[in-house]
Image 1 (cartoon, helix red, strand yellow):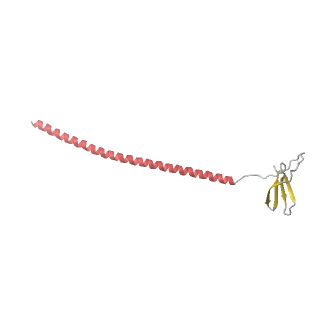
Image 2: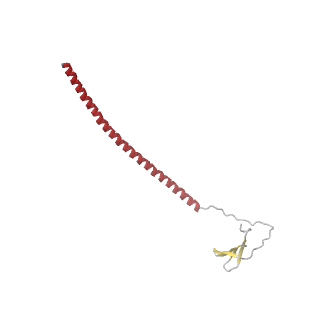
Image 3: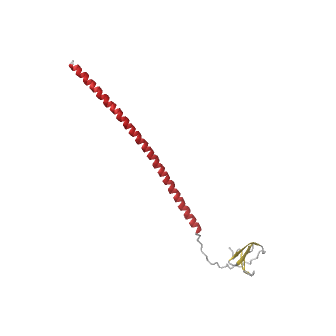
Amino acid sequence: MHEDQSHNLSRKYLFKSVSRITAGCIVSSSNLMKAVARLKWRFGIGSVLAVAVACVGLVHWQTSRALRVARQEVLSAEDLRFTVRPLAPVPSNFEWISAPASFSGAALFKGQFFLCGASGLFEYDARGSLVKHYRSGQELG
């Protein structure tokens, strides 16, 4: 019986130790599961924040680029490049017939008075005498 008793004791001891180990594993895996869950939340929040920062950076980059392009377009629109060349009248065997003197606009420019109409542009001085007549199609192109 002694052997039977020792077998029973070892069996009880084995059962207690297995149940302690199993209980310990359950407790430790529960802590492990909580830690993993916390890490998942932290990773999720970190990922969302990283995406938000990336989106803000992208929007900032695009707006600064658009403002730079718009600034360059405005500056280039102010700088109109042109060249001034004297034009000689074209000699032709064509006789001009003037249209009747009907004026559609007038302007004062650098002390000279200009009238315009169908027959061309007329330049008058301060006394009212005709200085120059620019004809449509010949001097005015």
